[in-house]
Amino acid sequence: MSTSRRNALLTLAALPLASTGAEKSEREKEDAKPFLGSWFGGVATTSLILSIEPHGEVLFVFLENGAFSIMRTTWKLLSGGMLIDGFPRFRLWEGVDPENIRAEMEPLPEDLEVSDGFRRFPRKIFLRRAATGRVTRDLQKRPLPSGWENPAVEKKWDEEAGKRR
Image: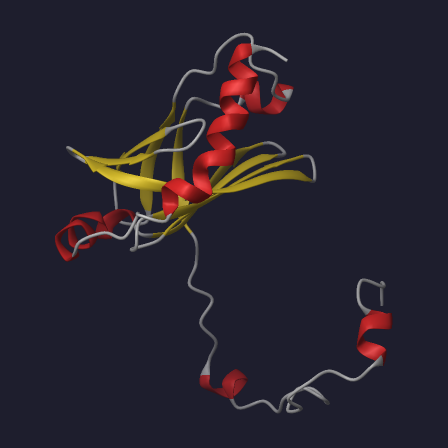
């Protein structure tokens, strides 16, 4: 295993410990407002999703040809934007409007073992804000599916879980 890969794995292993002290002050939350929320961007069959949370954590998802990598990390403010402090790190700046931000990925070490899609993913990319997904009043009034009002699932639920319809 290369040194860079070992360092990357150690960084990923330490992330849960690093995120425990990530709670942000009210001022930091206010300064971070333009970046908070869920963002996505991609090229061809490769996509990046960042869900930036007010308490200082980020959910990072990288999708490539149906496979994905997922991790939790932290963010911190930098002058004019934000740093996503994972591996790799991302620097964010405001975009041309509130629905877009600019993101730049740090250069990856040449000896780091990553997929070709990740290696070739653009270093600089615009990310778009994900839609909120709120439903209309008519949709909110629809009845619950059968069994959803119950406090626990039926025994057959476990047998049916994960099976295609």
